[in-house]
Length: 589
Ligand code: FAD
Image (cartoon, rainbow, N blue to C red; front, side):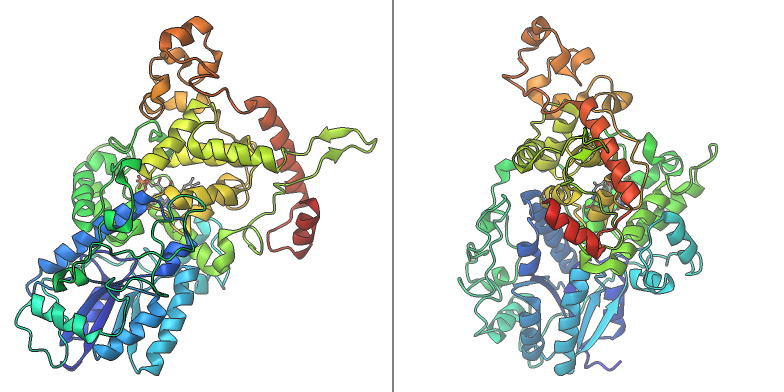
């Protein structure tokens, strides 16, 4: 490639420099200039209720990326711009004489839709697009093709397909240098002047860096509370001073109008921390080699997790999943103990689950997020009518109506269900943006087929708002799994609201941490304080029904009714994409 290549490298799912095959592809073009861009995408904000913790983690990751770019020989910088990418990018490549747009492939349905438009625009502008897979172990597009367009609904299906796709590619090093983002006729002697020139070249584009205030590119980034100011146009860069160095810089949480006091900043973002964390974990060869997910404890918090806590870093691409895979493989080789664990319960298995959901989502598309039209999703009637026997006797009452369900959903979200195990987990999620996998199992089964009989879509929405690691494939995929709507069918297997947590931690440390009003209860009652005699409650300084709620439902009764409902739905054997089902739903509602 000639020296005249001028590359716009668009960071999206890959906030890192190490093992980035897309970035390497950009450098292979031997560009004369490389523009490392992050473009705020209003759709990301409008479509999803992004909570403060996810935004914080993202900003920290962007800041770290920018600093890592600045640490390369040329001392370049991440260029943060904002606006609808389909409108803004064509302007950028026109004004910066871009010849190539290079991206890591975003295989999600939304990402593909957006990128199709970008590709069309690039074609019109004669900008060549290079898109390289790097977000998963295997390319979901290729896996789906090999699976004849069908979703991968089981780990064994995925394993069979990828067995013919060769080994996971080995990771590559971070580049030592990135060409500066210079204009074609640049006179700049340093980065500061370069940024000034770039800013000047964008004159007339009012919202590109946040200098402007209103307009179509303004987004409400303060949409963290449900029903917030979603349609109000607010600026997201109030602190911009007009200095060139500020113009393309990463905004602060405060400048986005977000209140840090509402969250606990337990998990910090960025490639640097991700790599440090991975190195620390992989030093413990025994931990890696004997990792067995079902044996890890959901009772441990993010400060001392029993699992790797890598999901937020993988979500934003701060950590390459291929590096995770290979570093774990290397660590395993050093293990001199007994037999190592295998997939699906070992670490490789966990990473393969991530791929499995990505490939399933790739095949289904947008409908993967919902029940309606989703061919992977079994139809479970979350609004089912009363069931009668042939003599007209009620055998199964109608599940609670909308008002009760909404009240339960709200209590669930706030961690006020009266079941300490569920409440501690939900408060952990709201406060810190993360929860152990088996904790997610507990709360997801509770909300759906276990006790509340509320659609998994509603639970997935709450996770979408609060999880740092929220992922458009893993989140709905796992919600379908836990509600036995897809992937998993053993609906008779449930998690006891008292016994499951106790199995891992009899002392209830997680409850004491996130439900401090219960912290003085003796171990015997920490999971079921509502069964504690009055004098025990008084001694603990917490009266159930006054200082902490009574359980909002009867665990056993709801479990037994819901089990019957599941049986009926399984016998009907309908799917979300079934047309009759859709009509039936409308009637039932
Ligand atoms: P580890 O056990 O250390 O696993 C290592 C990595 O493997 C994780 O970082 C993750 O990338 C991947 N992984 C592990 N288990 C799964 C799984 N079941 N599905 C997909 N990937 C997996 N994970 C997300 O990354 N984003 C989500 O939005 C998400 N939503 C979930 C919703 C529900 C209802 C449930 C039950 C699980 C969800 N998970 C999601 C999967 C899983 O809970 C998290 O990936 C895991 O808890 C992250 O912690 P860890 O990094 O310590 O995991």
